[in-house]
Length: 181
Image 1 (cartoon, helix red, strand yellow):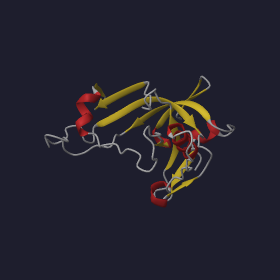
Image 2 (tube, rainbow, N blue to C red; image 1 turned 90 degrees about the horizontal axis):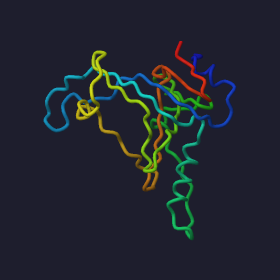
Image 3 (cartoon, helix red, strand yellow; image 1 turned 90 degrees about the vertical axis):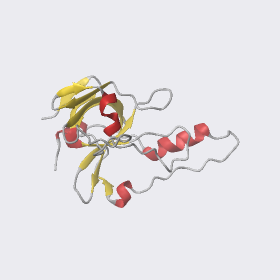
Image 4 (tube, helix red, strand yellow; image 1 turned 45 degrees about the vertical axis):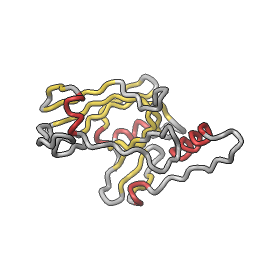
């Protein structure tokens, strides 16, 4: 199925610097991580996030470069080989997208721009409960814990994101803004 993002990216070659705006329902737990109180935001929260990154970058190459950067200059560094996406349920279906074979859901593959410590940069982050902005710190104890990359064998892990196409509301390439239709 063709998506507006496919049309925007159709003529692009190689890696492409972008800024994405997403509108997502964050993964949450049903109880506060520490107090075990019921989550008052469950099913009511949306996250609007603006983040820069690269589409079309190669995950294995990025991790391999990080391994080389962290290695002793006189040592041999083994190239990184990624495990199958979603335990084998994922497949590439374009230069910038992957598809979950079972669900049929399509995703952009984003290499987030990082700060000096390697943390993905977020330019704007709005947390909305029933359309009203609330501080992230208020909802943080109810958000599902994020897993750290396990198999990269690096100190400074390489973040990677798969973002459901339907959650992308804006895509900026070369200063040109493309919005969901």
